[in-house]
Length: 89
Image (cartoon, rainbow, N blue to C red):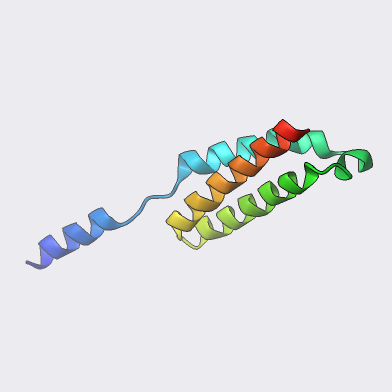
């Protein structure tokens, strides 16, 4: 009985969102180069870039805390914001 309970609990444990984190990091990195200068930081799309950076930071912190579902959500948000920043640039 105990071994069944342990097996069920182990299967419910979430896994680190490796793919989502990698995609978010790549998306943010790809737009980071677009916002290097002072002029670029004045553009409206810069807010999306900042949101992407913040979401990626929060995803990384959640990952370090083993809060994998939160990390996945934040990584997806970072990717979405980075895409918006690139699109509006």
